[in-house]
Image (tube, rainbow, N blue to C red; front, side, top):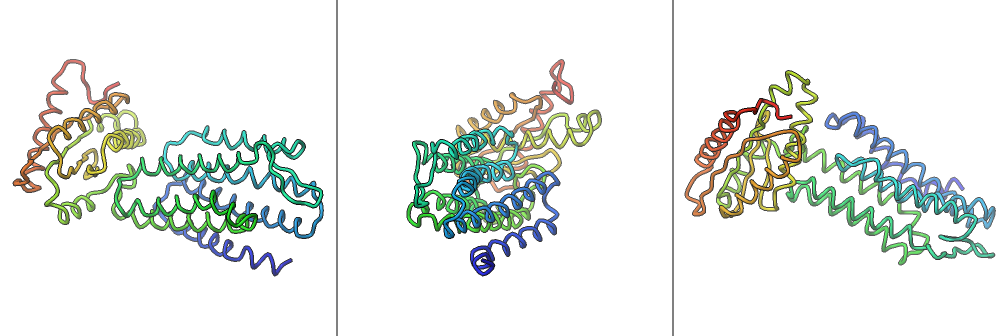
Length: 359
């Protein structure tokens, strides 16, 4: 039994230990994210033990009723783990993301007595009930949601897309391989997900050299790198500055100011397209680099930003500069964009009733 345990689980144990060490040594994650990551690691550790015990009972042909309980846990744990992955990796996700997985858990428990999802034949073989494919459907739905949320929060750069694609491939294998490999895949599912999450986390840490820790946007260094390497494709800039950040910090505290900046950054990111990259280059200063854009593209982008920001209690000033022919250099575009942005800011504060913090 010990030999079989080591053969089946040693790789998983090693990766989880490495994951814990990485979490202990990284300084880039906030305390809340770290707690969720530790819960995820613990969940994976418990899960592969459940799988091991279930299949050990099957091989021995003993305790079929106990095995049904372990099957219910296994079928329920997979969507719960992916829901926890979403809750951990995707920002601003409500706890309600767990509700479908919790509902499936209730159905799986009922199935122990009714066979609605699974049951065992007299010889111990698995039999699927009327809802036998529901766990796979839910895993697929959660996987699609995870990829969507990660893409939505990304800056659409290759360094960010690769780990997301890798994670997507790993989860997709969980939907396809069970039908190709049968029950044996359940024994490698945990290590597959653990490795995928570990790789994703390592790449996320590497990306932080180019990302702003607070907002998740690209940072000033990334801005300079893009300007130096892709200047021929850049023909427009959009400058954005938050109105009233100092007043928020002074009256409500710096935590409220951080929330304001994160909210504004999220609004800007939601408004951009693939050819538009967002950078935080200062305290409340943001720049969007646009490649091969028309003036109509820029005006539509600004309208989307205004619409998103209007749904919050914050306000920002926006300016832009464009050169369709590409004859202006970056410094000229930046100067012109900043000038129009500051005119927009001055106009905003000149209107009656506008203070440093819009309520």
